[in-house]
Image: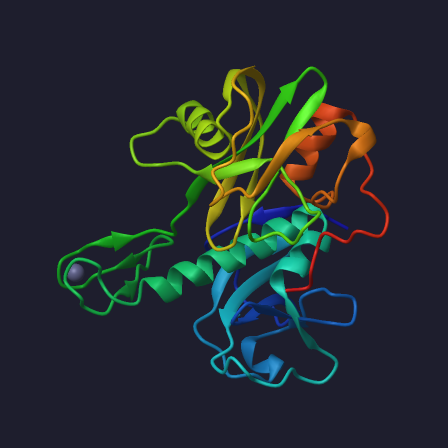
Length: 282
Ligand SMILES: [Zn+2]
């Protein structure tokens, strides 16, 4: 069985066989008892009122589609359930995460581009590409990706971990922030670290990237070294920060996140402290 997700835009002709359906209602996704998207030959087979379907590509060799449920509070069809996207995605393998991220970002784009941002006309789906176009002024809106950096700062075998006010006490992660207009990725890394914890860095190196569909980011991960300054938190984006070695880790993000891959890379495969769950089901 093919396991990879092959993204696509043009759906294959219908063959009467089941396709995968990624159906969203608000921030929840419809799943079966195994936490997988349901299968049906067509949208009508799901028994829910749906918005327009968008083709995502092939997953496990079968076509996959995504659509909004028109009623956000719709009851799940028999045998299926609504599950919070965040907890679901973090438990999924990489190829399924990629499929889910694509679905979430395409539906977010569809919902946010109903009307032209220049002249206010209703937008239309472009026939030839993944775009929405204004019939009056021609403005074209493609799915938006918002780049963000995520960075591991290392100082003599210890790693800079920080707590955002959004995290409960005891949960820490590496620093992250959105790229600003006109900024390079390296410039963003240096600025975010300086702004949030008052530290200078050097030796900025690309590590890896991960789509982050909450709602439309691409996380671009870097490693770097401490080059000067002592930690001084801004108290707004960061409320707690420190240098952590492998022997004293707080609760850190789960394995499926690029934050955790960065932490493991720098500190050599640390385990989360037992009994401190990171991931709320939301
Ligand atoms: Zn327009």
